[in-house]
Amino acid sequence: MSASSALTFRNRLGELVDVPAVAATRLKNDFGSVLEQALKGGAVTITRHETPKAVLVSYEEFQALVRNREANLNDLSAEYDVLLERMQAPAARRGMAAAFDAAPAELGRAAVKTARANRKRR
Image (cartoon, rainbow, N blue to C red):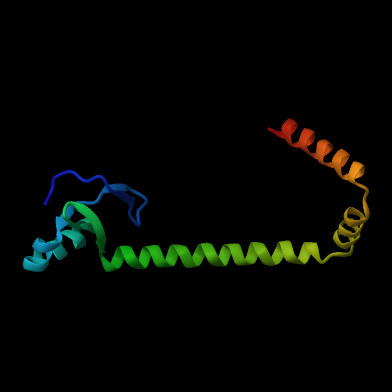
C-alpha cells in the first residue's frame, strides 16, 4: 500500500484523514488485512493501474455518512415546508400578483433597490 494518498475525507468525528490506496490485485489476494486497515482508518482507496476506482469504507463510517445525510435532508424538508407556508400567506400572494402585474420599469427599479440594500448588508 502506498504510504501517501491523494485522497482525504472527513470521518464521522469531523477529522480530515488521508485515505490509503491499495491495488485491486492486492485487495483480491489480501482482503483480510485491507479490511482491517479500513476498519482502523475508516476507508481505503482501491486502485486499478494506480488510478482510484473505489473506496472500501468501514460500516461505522458508512452509517455516519448516511445518518448525516438523512438529518440534513430532514432539516431541508422542514425549512422547505416553512418557506412554502410563507409563500402561501395572503401577503405573499398579493406581492406575487403585484410583481406579475408590474411594468418592466417598475421591476427594474425594484431590482436596483434590492441590489443596493443587499450590498449595504455585506
